[in-house]
Image (tube, rainbow over the protein chains, first blue to last red):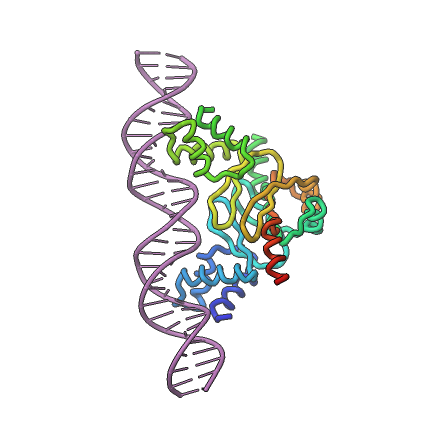
Length: 126
Length: 126
DNA sequence: TTTAGAATTAGAATAGTTCTAAAAAAGGAG
DNA sequence: CTCCTTTTTTAGAACTATTCTAATTCTAAA
């Protein structure tokens, strides 16, 4: 693994922020001022193809790159904010219910984040 | 609802094929030869915003538009083919495990479709 | 009818991402 | 080390799905 790959992987793994390629690029620039956005994409794609990072695809926004560690995502339906959740037994559940061998799954749960919920409640009570 | 909207909704609802905007466009052209792709997008977006259809976002392919009727998706990790599955109790499960009020969820299960699985098995046995 | 709002059109524009070809760097064999 | 091959990086062009813009047409209510 090249130094860029290694560093990019470290950035992804040590962040809990669901970074975009551009955000990774800016973080890389701090360590490697000469790096170019295309190299970030190259490396993110390679890492993703090797199964070392995840790619989180959302509506109307750039893709996010995420550590592999098992977790799922809550997406606020109002502001779009992403947060992590941990669910148990889902793979087993899906396999049991469908009969297929699950390689992996991608679950996004739409909800209202506490801030947006408060705003909604506030609006409603007026 | 305008006639375009109505017709596009019918196309989505009567198809089990997870159509792209372009595919919807071609189907619409059969009935409405003058329609333009932008109008298809306008209407798909409107229908989606009104919550009358779903949008299925996948990696490296145009968005698919799908009927609302409750179901989830299997995605073949090899050929990308999409199929429907029906799961029970997932919303309840997620709510129980996370404590949030689930508005909806989007689940894509990666697996090998029968054809691709056969091809893999074949390869391995050689 | 007239008018206002909505829908449609054509085509330009956008944004995120990928591609291309050349240059640089890394790795291995001798 | 030196040569050779492969991989990675770079710069910038290109791509593509989608959105935007502004002008036009349609619709339906008053």
